[in-house]
Image (cartoon, rainbow, N blue to C red):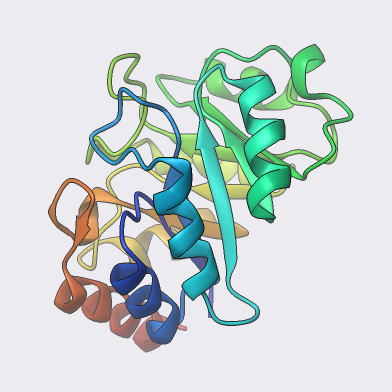
Length: 204
């Protein structure tokens, strides 16, 4: 089955539920402007609750130095840069990097190509205020063109209702789901998470 990252986790309980349902990774937002923001102590409790083989990914917005420090402190498996970070800022980063690319139109193909080789690309809706978790679906045709060229994580408005179709259309390395399985920002709906994994398993 497709790899799944449940992003915007704010509690050990939601992290464990995601892991038990089949998530490969959970996402922790360290950007203070996010309604899903977690501080270091809160994040540490979540990371410590994770079972083996489930990764914790830190999400940062133009916070290169902070990402390196927190990543090392908490033992994050990867960091996700969701801002306007230029390639030079994270090339050679000591922790595996995921770089978000906003899909507004076909210019996203060139933007993804500019991300350094070896860096995984995450495709999301364009929103310079919320920086993810918008519930907006992106153009899957553009996403598929990018996924054919490099390792790609598909995000943007995914939910139990459309995730399986998105995977079939784009064939990404993984998907990233946040608002589509929430009861409220930062609080996951365990029934919706269960429905998501059931839908993916049915189409696997």
